[in-house]
Image 1: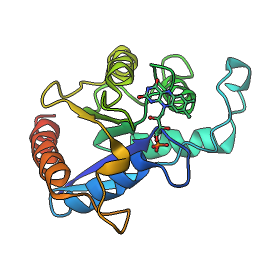
Image 2: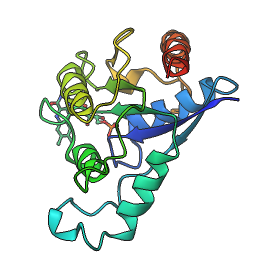
Image 3: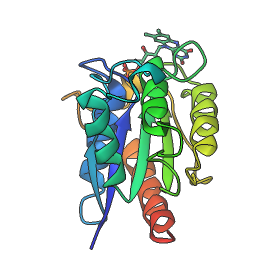
Image 4: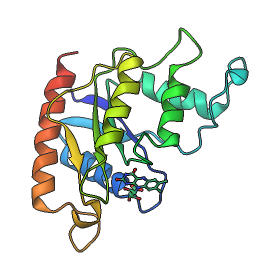
Length: 181
Ligand code: FNR
């Protein structure tokens, strides 16, 4: 049976390239991994003040992560670091203290940027946060997708062949990584 993967997209933008990459990776992983996007847009900002009576959106999110066998993070870089919405999701999942939903879930990180740098700085900061919450991250291959405005065909949704090929091999490696846990 395919392993269930929670896909978290770091951009909330409607026409997000990262979301489109996520949708394409879901398509490319069919028959290999059961990937589904877990939404983070409606998570109230984390504060310990709400630990006793958590917002429903926090509880739903935590349950969705608990039900997954692995995690795939696909994110842009904001000001050379992790976008706030994604960091908030990490924080929501990590609390209340002692009840984190993250530990032990095998994960992988993909970043993309409209620049040629592919979100390298954010990729490493995202890794840092997930390593701390005890997510074993796939180290290789790394995925820094540059020039994200140019990687889709005319329909604006389908990946061009070279990126699709790279991400297919990334998915194959991730499938092997997830199987180890
Ligand atoms: C950006 N962008 C950006 N790009 C980058 O390579 N390094 C960066 O530090 C930043 N910083 C940044 C901050 C903020 C607030 C925004 C809105 C954007 C540009 C970014 O790569 C571009 O907007 C992408 O298209 C965002 O990804 P989505 O929304 O298309 O998935």
